Amino acid sequence: MEQLVVQLQAVGFSAYEAKAYTALVEAGRPLNGYEVAKRSGVPRSTVYEVLGKLAARRAAYEVADESDSVSYVPLSPAMLTSRFRSNMDHVVNSLESGFDLLSTPAQARLTHAISGRPDLLDRCQDVIRAARTDIFVSVWPEELDVLRTDLRRATDQGVDVSVLCFGDPGEPIGYSYQHEFSSPDQVLDNVGCRLMVVAGDRERAVIGGLDGSDTWGTYTDDAAVVAVSVEYVRHDIAMQLLMRRTSGDESIQEYWRTAKELMRLRSDHGEPAERLRQMAKARGRR
Image (cartoon, rainbow, N blue to C red; front, side):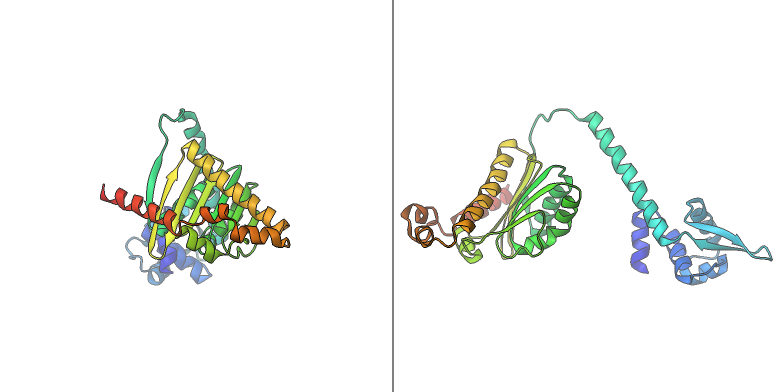
């Protein structure tokens, strides 16, 4: 019940209104002011004022019995939450329209550093939720689990979603692919961290690295960096599809393992992550 009171306050109820409303719902029958005060902890001196405010919100209604004694019943929680959702959608739509009128061509591009896994994933969710046309994601299972709900919602809204996962992606989301030709352990050894990319609408991207307790990353809407991020994911997906098609060809497998040209590209074990760490530390000292 305490959590419900907190959540109702988050959508505009006062603490007393939230307590009175939850008491009405919990009772399952009409309550008079004395009963609401007793059940909710709202002071008797103010309970009728609080119930009046709930009635004004149309979150509760007065009912009278044969003796004309006034009691109160709540608007059903299903209808209340539906009303909140509708009101919030209206507010958000109005904000979008208003900001569209204010928008002017950007004079500068935004790029900022991110530290800490929660902040990194929050920024990834921002990019996913803002996307309207396409999303490209290169990710590891641990982080995909956090982003899954938002990615699923994006696909349901018609956004074209492409996901490349370094490990089992679980239930497919949009166009999902597992990085198969190099194992996750090999990739981790080569890169030195769980490198991830989330790009939305080819307008904004988050690039991050996670290694144990260390997390660092960057958000950007710089068109050049976003383009490179998208092409990185697209190219990696294309490589996986080609390798999957030729997986039975031993000569290709042998070439991948032993070709000097490819071995040279894999020779800097952990160096990409180490450079990212140094950059993150340098930012932290500023």
